[in-house]
Amino acid sequence: MKRLYIIRHAKSSWDDESLDDYNRPLNKRGEKNAPFMGQLLKDKGVMPDTIISSPAKRAMSTAEIIAKEVGFQKPITPNPYIYEAFVNTLQEMVSYIHDTNDVAFLVGHNPGVSALAYMLCDIRESIPTCAIVEIEFNCDSWMDVSKENGTLKSYEYPKKYA
Image (cartoon, rainbow, N blue to C red):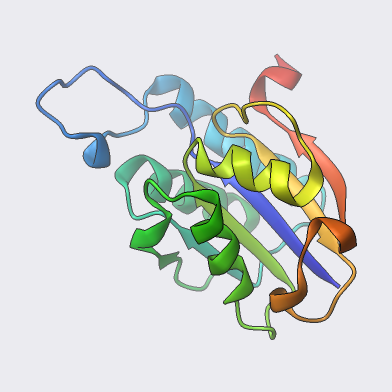
């Protein structure tokens, strides 16, 4: 069994117009929601074997905060291909996760994460900021993950608890 957590970065700030999109930080709501969602995962006993994140500041900050909350001690793997990725690129990245990892977090951006969730478990909406889609796959290799062997286990987002 493989378990994938598709995570959209937390809410980011548009306050500094001199920053390019890649370097935008989290805003106050994002800084509040990311630890909340990490604690939610911790309370469910979730511990990833690997965390792969877009290196964009808002995504990496989200990944770092969630990693801290769940007690993840390994380095987070930044992958520049996640930033502005189309769904086929994200699906390919999932297939390249090493099979020794049974639980993986993928932290990225819309529209890619929403398209990936749709492709793998038929969620038909735009994934909100800091949302976490948990999909379990009945297979032993990341190369084999697909909608056919995937089951949506949970879909959590901060406003669900507001």
